[in-house]
Image (spheres, rainbow, N blue to C red):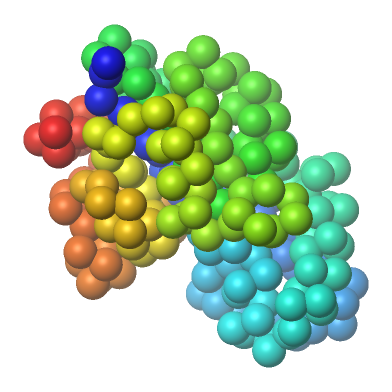
Length: 213
């Protein structure tokens, strides 16, 4: 069986900042919460939304869940289409698919992740698209990776992502990890999370993946 390459979605395969941030602004306006500066707004990209709402605004689990439902009003209608695939990604996927089993692990609800990949015409490259459940019971990256590995029935894998959550989720599942600098994280964040490899560009991914196995 081929080794598995797990990709994060937002900030790794796609630049989804426009749709996510527009959805966050919509949610904050509708709930009467203060809209923070741009740097803080970008912290919404990556981790489960309810967790960020709890950390930044002190919302209870019930309040955060209500806010998440408002976020989804905009995201499901408009935000889901406000994204672009990073340049060079499809070329790399073609190359990798010949030698590895490819899958997606994202904290985004699985329903949305599958819809996005289908809309982008990238479905044929992936053996599985694994994400959070809408109820929020499987939301953090550690849980999503564990879920993906169980479904794929394989443990020899590497995780690729742009934020510390991807790297820490990989470690929790005893996987090596590759951090990317073209997404929404930065080198310091990835170093502190102890990514096994860090790449600056999409084109560097195949060599880093080969080294990880």
